[in-house]
Image 1: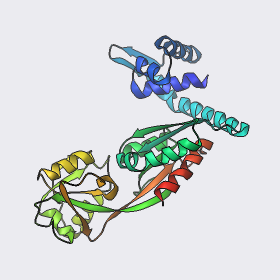
Image 2: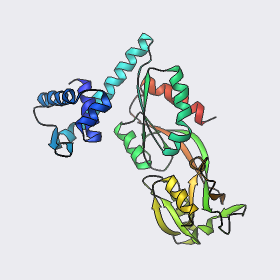
Image 3: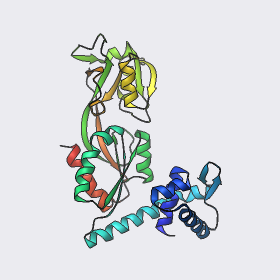
Length: 293
């Protein structure tokens, strides 16, 4: 079973479209179809359902997917190890991350990394907490940038602790106060980030519930920092975001420290049983250098 065919099937499983897979991987559509046909001949059964709107894996294809992913991953490790022995640094590093990491830290990391290792490709996939945790577990990414929370069953590398800040309209009664008290979250509609996307703000909700034995007035749920800030600016309620997510975009709102203070810990997560590829190990060192300084 050739690794290139496995990579093609993995990409099809991700996007459900042969034409898009061909464009993404740089093959012709006929070439992709031929590779899938070859895989199916090796297996002795169909791996894809062909439908009008695209393709999807058959039950047999879904059952084989974790093994096919392992074949592709180990082949990538093999290629990178050979390249390293030869003195050439090649390969691909797959990164899963928050939007805030992608916007404020990754450009510096990738810029420095790319200057020293121009032959190594970096693939960035944005998602929320649950997405990134699942990608690490399934080995879809080499490294995940996310926040620490209980129950994470992968290797964690702490990078940076940063404060969580209260957001309110500029005409809010506490806009000129020194700090935003925890109790004030119960006096206004609360715009809450979806837990599967950003679990950090939920620590404030849990602390409020623990102290006052009730929940804040949660009225709106959002998966976007941009949308949250816009809704706060338009007087729809108050919210909370990590400091990094507010850089350069909070002119239309008031931002205050919370009393008592809350913070999140940004971490790198890697699969506990998978040896990092040479390229990913190098990338980790560059990430530490940028984020931990």
